Length: 564
Image (cartoon, rainbow, N blue to C red; front, side, top):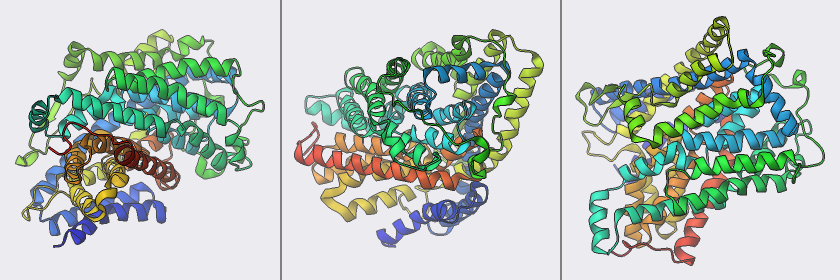
């Protein structure tokens, strides 16, 4: 079979998902079972995978799904706990005192707080936390999900304390062989990895500084009374200021300290600067912008678990006490990821399945205490005491949160296994490359010297499939490096734009959209969200590709292994 035909077959599951979700607007609960069965058929009959490997990949996907549901449950439970404790009422009042302008609130909650949470935990947690928090302060559920998804971009490459670089790139490249080659050139693997890290940080900073503006523009265009871009551009100075307040400390940290803390510190520093600026009305538009009255919102904007502001507990509480649970989430996440002893203790509780059904490399594990879900649940228990809650209130929060999992779980039960079949298809009777690699190879063979323009799209494709920057980097880093070497250009730069593209792909990753939608009761309307997030994703990968071309061919960016 020709490489073109092979790539076409590999692409068909993605095309089918796009047609059903975006074109026909099917709910993910109908679309993903169909896409799963289609993918399994492609694996069996075209890729010649064994039936056992298909089943093993499905079981692996189910284990990973349980981990995702645990994170979703923790995020919703914390929010519902704060609803019943009166914390949300105080948080909402606090935001109103900072600024009643919804555009400013979106930038502070989704962009800056979301970037901080991404830096601490990753795994789609920002959308799962920011979306329901935005709903709680008065945003339509659809707008909240959109804002939560758009933050799945710039901070993602350094999410979860640098996991996409430290684990994704390190695992995705043949470090032993490259380390030996670098040593022969008088360099070393840590220096090479830092070059990749710096390139990722600089590229993201250039492309991502305008993301708060894009968020606001989409907010005013799709959810404003006038449906205008103009209301979005009114906040342009403040939005760019908020973008720079994150990206400047972010890029400095990435270049000088390494991959662990750019998003974390960028989010924290940016949050402090921008919140203070908003309080003093610095660059804030003179006229406030708000949504139409809630009674006038279209039905598709409203989630099934919409938080009615009248239902919120009205217990007197200081802003600090109300925010303390979220501060604790960030602090505990950082401690759990930075200190090896704590990491080891939390990871010691693990449910692991190695080589499922005897299939080599098809393994999965759940670490319930280490995953953000475990930390979120722990903070819920702490909140019970610091907010002086009654047992009946916590019970109500648990009941409300559990009901969401059933619908979210059904979709993810098909989405994640489908992805694992694609990724695990490299082991087959026909000795064919895995489906993602087959697609990537065809693209590389077809475009030649302009490949850097398309390299971020390959990364985004990996993230779209896997819902993870880390997994995309693991799948494609070696491939991207190999293409760069064959073209005689910088492998470090091409791997860097792979990582940036993979971060952008999180904005359209199906199971990230499902997870965020679940937290606000919008399951079934994933296609509507994807139709909107695809445009910022296209901007991100094209801008990144152009930067890659300029860096390699105009600025002459190189590395020790070019020509080796």
